[in-house]
Image: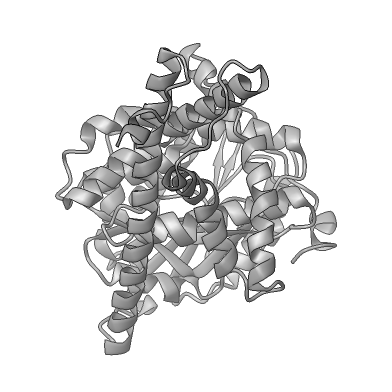
Length: 442
């Protein structure tokens, strides 16, 4: 016991306080990770049992509405819409929102011949005021125009599934069949597809693919047990009734830098369940430029800081204790990550400048740090080990992935500074030409 008490005895008092707080965070993170792995396995087992019993609704019992926000997407829009049109859905509508494009997006869309395709053209001053506004306009158009047509009048809000697909998104053709399993549960308000990067030709895009895979296969899959899995914007499927439940008068989506995260949390707080479906995928472009990646991740991180305001609604849903705790932990993630990273940097500075003599840590402390640092990445690598590398190589590949994680770590601090300064502007992520992406598509 005295060894534990003296664990940070050679550190200044303020540093001891920081280190003890971070140690508590690390223990909590390790417990959370292990819990998520257990409940993820349990959730997969239950879903397999439901599938085996045939206690499911067929995709033909739903109307599938795909929303595609498009602002100057001439590079990818034809590819994305043509792939959507190949989706195996008995009843489908593809609603593309041309949000004031001044390139060839409108001309390309006009040249696509499919009776299921609808184009909602927005012009100034309504256009180009954010993705949330574009989606809300499509939501209003769907309810007021599309669903009032005689051919769609029979569909109730519980049976209309609204999918959001980015203009570079490639949804698996069998996605409606896969997610109909989730929506067979009338309490499920939304489900998120597994996100993959299709232009994995550099270490940077490979690491982004691992990052999305880790989030979907480990964290999201575990939260599906409690019904607290969140929406990711690209490849999110939501029940129209759930969207209506969080409509505040201007529409379901709010003007946030991560409007998808905000929507998913509010749906859970309104009493709906959120799930992750890893049986279908949505593929999107990764960023091969570190500068563009930083710009994108700063926006996402600032959206995560904005989501802290949702903590006050955690007490609303009827969740079990662990589900409620996980909701809190999820929303506090940016603060937890920043605090942990700060403690690590301080420890390095103390060691490098001899401000605090190094002493061997307790084995269990080292183990907890290892679990937190390597655990999610290692588990993801092992899950992916059937593709082109073996399990031993998967263990080795955790190291470059951790390097990537630390490279993008500063975005948390930059995003916090932007949020405190009231700067919420953002720049649209540029697309890569499909010819270049296809040359090395995996």
